[in-house]
Figure (cartoon, rainbow, N blue to C red):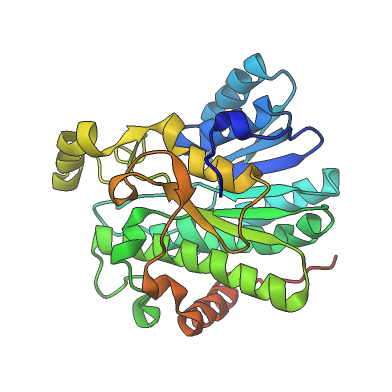
Length: 308
């Protein structure tokens, strides 16, 4: 792949994109740049106030290209409601960016459906959303789905025996698992697209270590990890705008590899220009990915059917 920058974004005119968690951070800058490139972007966010404010900011730069829609990934009912509203008003979806996430809350929390919060929001909510929107994606000429992973996937392990961390909740261990699950989801979705002849591009991206609100909204400013991250940020992190570049590359570049993974290309992939990233070997385990997929189908009660 040739060197890629914001200037390399081709016109997205006529395309429709959904970006989850687009009211701030990586998601906001992803939605902003897609809108500036001509795409119509749905900001799928939990907070009506923050989502509407973000859409207004984007429309001030790219008039008429952003709209807020309520989506709470911690509730499968909300995911279904969002998908139903979308399908009632739109026939085709070109791009789905599964960006929203929760990072390492100090104590174990659960979603409305009883899932551990991180696996529930980061992975299972997005799994259900993608399954419900697949028929709309299949109507697009070149559909793409982007999953947001993390350098944290390197320390992740999929524990199917205790996926919900009911027996042993360790905040960062569970976060690492959820981000590994997102990368494995992207790779398995591409395998299934290839096997079924769907023509879907399934990709993953990670922002390196980006300065966003995710730490404050997860482990909080009083946690040891938050303190360490704050001290290290000047040396290993990059801005939220820079952190969005790998996602934008995956979402818009014409020469991406099916099932590709993209991130910063600097030291340890913490920051730097966007390019090809390296998945750890556990992310490439197709047998675990298949078992994880089947578990997600059971938990969310959703299967992937390309047709109506």
